[in-house]
Length: 379
Image 1 (cartoon, rainbow, N blue to C red):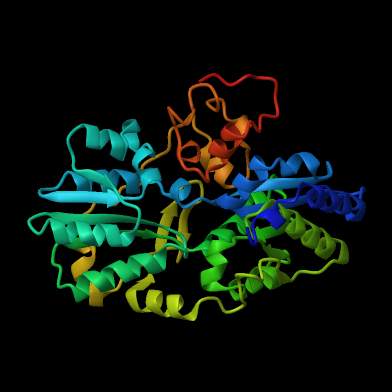
Image 2 (image 1 turned 45 degrees about the vertical axis):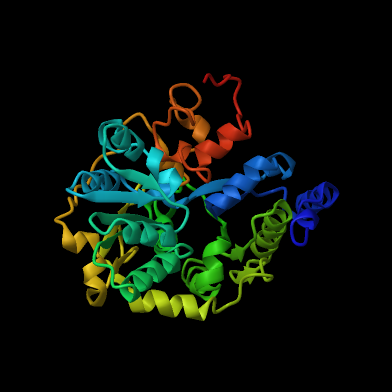
């Protein structure tokens, strides 16, 4: 299959890893953060850390939209599902993320609230069409990749004259999160998280392009290489980062040129700009309040905004104290550093969002057996 099989060639992967080993300076270490959960998944699935040289360390970032949503917003969605005549719908992964007191949307559904899984935003619009006497709320999450489909759904609902369709908007922005990480005490002051470069997200970059990352290369002196999700994509990106670090360069390079351009998708960006505006601040799991890091629906489309239609709770709720999801999302810890990982916390019994989402670091480590200690996980 074009652009799949040739990017999973085992022999080429071994050659690339050997080349990285030859080019990496044995006198130093390289700490490279893959921001996107899809890259974390690929690294675990294909065992890339096992073939990279020992002085090249991959640091898992916060690039899983399900993982970064804070407990308070999940509680707010459950609250919306409890309002009169409401059908709340969202993507499948969100149903299992624990809110406060470990109550998830799935458990709330079992208690009698009308909560449904949809595969697309337009499924939610069709649900509103089919249930004119009910109020349908779409629990919208995601980075720049899933924001345009939400805008399309609102446009479609407006064109159909629907008055019973609402969006609970939780779309967040990748560049703001990268800035928050680089400005964090662990990176800037304490040095407990070493970051020499970034593997830039793939799907997000098809929308926003490579240009937004140029700021990080210039201002923070960190190279960025945008990469696809196949194993050879990731290995090639690592080699490109190692070369930049060796040369003392700080540039944005695009390994994923078959899908990403510098300017991105102009039509999608225009649609988002028409529909949404920046929030002054938004809470992220693990990162806290991040300025100008999320979107809300503009006043012109207020009729579709669940937060304007209802007085939605805006509570900030602390994470489970025993769960290390926050530290994992910041790159401070790895999944195996969490005492709950593989014991109490499993995909069947998730204690935190990183074990729920298919792109979460904990779920990737569990699914592909990326255990670096001798403790055997128990189901």
